[in-house]
Image 1 (spheres, rainbow, N blue to C red):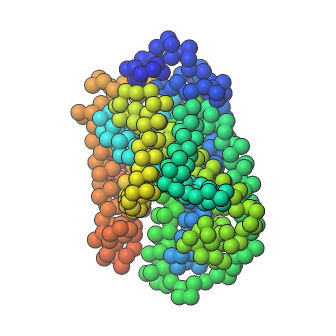
Image 2: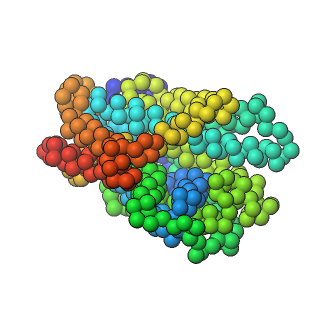
Length: 476
């Protein structure tokens, strides 16, 4: 891609010379944005996807979520069952990755097939960009808190200027990976996965030695209350894989003939295994220490010498997550219609997220507000994933990459005024149904009638998938 985004169906000679196979580009800034990846530049094997998703899931957040299930009142074995079931949504993340090699395009472009050129801009603005930036800010805040603790251990005072510097340094490291792009991610994430695995192996030994394997809360949940918490737990765990609607971004450089089953398997396994293990460690830890303050609680059972190593690992894990988020958010910003280079769009996303983080940490409780709002994202993400997965099934994963690049009124994907009505109606109906069933920041009428049962995730996905399957034209 040239220095500015050309007409999507075009490719300049300069771009063809600059754009090298990803295996040769780890030390170069990726030149491709949302444009089509030609077959001559496809490289790699699907097993490389494992480390990409594993590095993003060996992290502090998964540990905290696992502990939260115990704090919600579940027994240890109930919590472990919820962790396994909730993480099965990684299979859907794998399914959403399979159009990448076929289309040679990122998810942000592929979704034009289901929402239309204009409708997809709205989809990318909300699902692709706004939610991603908010997640980036929350993760950056978590990493910065760990880094502040490291500063204090070094004998320094985490004053406001120091905190600002720490946030900016972590953001800069994250954005460097996102700016260099796909090839650097593919090369870095295997060693990051190995380092984080080694660190969390030490955590596992310490936690499993102290865990109470027969843990049961003083007042065990029963009946409707138990089902309400089980459903809430599955939704909490499932929101992680559902937030990665952009998995094709990281598979699009694979050869067109790459096995769809291999893409699904390595992507799903890369997210499922580490997330199950780390979430389970959080649940085990919560049977031995107070996980309302995870960092302090874990310090009680971890070796003293290991504490700074653990804090550094928390920062590294968050950088790995946020680099993927920043990369996809940059593509989303381009897909919204803003004509800038991918590298500049990534920097813009990171700047916005860093600003939100600093405001939240130093000025107000903004991040708490954002965190609460993001608890409702499953209302949107579940139906969006359902429409996407259903479209893949209906088309039998047959996507025309060059045709998807055409944003003109003559495009096959212009549909009606730039909007694909079946996709828009299915998404709208699913979001509405989920909103009626949610019981997070508010109790929807359906949830209230069912005594607090939150069925937003299954209902929203079922309505969107079913309606889209009925309305969409299978001849496309």
